[in-house]
Image 1 (cartoon, protein in one colour):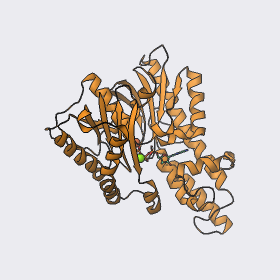
Image 2 (cartoon, helix red, strand yellow):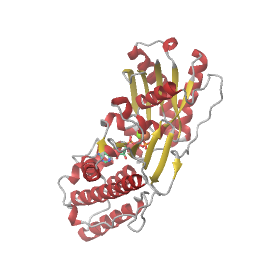
Image 3 (cartoon, helix red, strand yellow):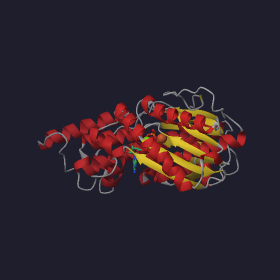
Amino acid sequence: RLVLGIETSCDETGAAVIDETGLILGESLHSQKEVHMKTGGIIPTVAQRLHRENIGRVVQEAMERSGVTQSQLSAVATTVKPGLALSLGIGLDFSLNFVKLHQKPFIPIHHMEAHALTVRMLQPVVFPFLVLLVSGGHSLLALARGIDDFLLLGQTLDEAPGDTMDKVARRLSLIKHPKCSMISGGQAIELLARDGDRLKFLFKPPMGAHYDCNFSFAGLRNQVTMSIQKKEKEEGVEQGTLLSCVNDIAAATQHTVASHIAKRTHRAILFCKAKGLLPSCNPTLVVSGGVASNQYIRKTLKIVTDTTGLHLLCPPSKFCTDNGVMIAWNGVERLREGKGILSHTEEVNYEPKAPLGVNITAEVK
Ligand code: ATP
Ligand code: FE
Ligand code: MG
């Protein structure tokens, strides 16, 4: 069984052809990150235009590299939720035309489910397992109980950690920093934090009085912004030109983000254990999303899993960020179980907002 996967939910146009075992036969990825970095954020109409300009080529490249013909495909799997409406629309339109033309089954994919399940393509991980997804657009903790069965333990109440770090980086104009010109805000923060002293700035940990597994990063960003403002004033420099203590600010920001994520994850583990939701044999925490490539955050999470007896799995960065492979893999998992497979004649709509699974309040005092 061969599946073509297509991803256009945000700012990556991705396509891949994989087989039933998860072997990647061909893939192609076009990232819009550089364009969006210049405008300081994603402009949906720009994202839409870039998806439209690139999707044909990206899919063709993935197909050609795989050596698979359209008629050999078992199905086409495409992200239809959640994401930017204009971006999702391009992938969906393209896919529906494709499956009609070649008379193939269509498998609509939930982007976050795909992120959560990608790890199973790389190694055997059995349900149930705990998932932490931390990226520029998401922050959530969930228990994966099956390929389409998720218990949402917590999610961000405002913004995602990658977004927070991108905004702090922008406020510090790190794009102009000699060490940080071609990297994301999160990577810039990680890089500068290595030479910083996190104790030079003390930020209040978010949500200290909330004993659940939700996240919040906007308050932290406010505190960081105020500290930057104060320093700029003290040193009499213009906005975004602070030099002296950017490393320390980066270190303190990264530390506060890491410890917030670690505390919520720790609570989710305790909650699941108390409710008997995790298997006694080899309980696992899977961490994915762009922020998961941060080594400081990984180390902090390792302490949490070591002290609670969980196994920590972080797929390589390439599989943590958006791509066509993870969508194709979700298609394979669905084909195997015969779940959510549509005929090429069925109507399908995209859904910009779509929660992952069933939400429960996961409190531990
Ligand atoms: P989503 O996948 O949720 O739709 P996205 O496309 O923004 O959102 P990803 O591509 O998974 O997410 O990740 C990009 C985000 O990860 C950016 O916000 C970036 O700053 C952050 N990031 C990347 N590398 C690091 C790092 N080393 N440390 C911290 N954050 C990082
Ligand atoms: Fe994503
Ligand atoms: Mg993305």
